[in-house]
Image 1 (cartoon, rainbow, N blue to C red):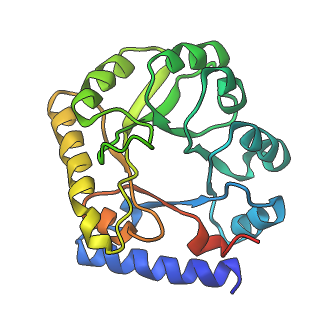
Image 2 (image 1 turned 90 degrees about the horizontal axis):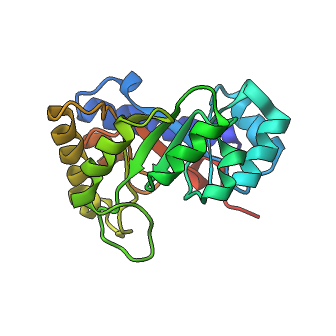
Length: 222
């Protein structure tokens, strides 16, 4: 299948999930996870009208952005070390995995405008995953909201993998409830980045505004 054909399948799933959740299709943005994919594959995605591309590796993002430039809207969705902020800051549209307030100082040094960020929340309490614990997320959000180097947009999570997508619903609900509590406190937590190829319908049902889809769009890696 071509990228366009796979996109049509994903789009139908998104439309159905939005309909079942009584949500507008416009409320959900599709981020095509393009990490490790070659530039021609990204160009095929852009040709279909998909402009939101997600990268996990700082130098790879730097190199692809140098080639494709403003044709794409770049999302940095991986963890980030402070010494690599310099690669991400000039080109990223949104950083999905903010979890260390010290990164805000680095972004402030390398951008003229605040870096839009989502706070990564480790809803599954997995040692193998980055992100802050649920009970610390809103405290970090308060710090981020007051820092001039970053602009708080919302929250992100990657739940533990479950063979049955329905079983990840509690993790998505936790993130949605956390965002709702933050909004009651006056925090601008309007974006929820959650859901991938396997489980994005469940994420949409719980309020996802950004879903991250890779293999289901680009096909198996060679």
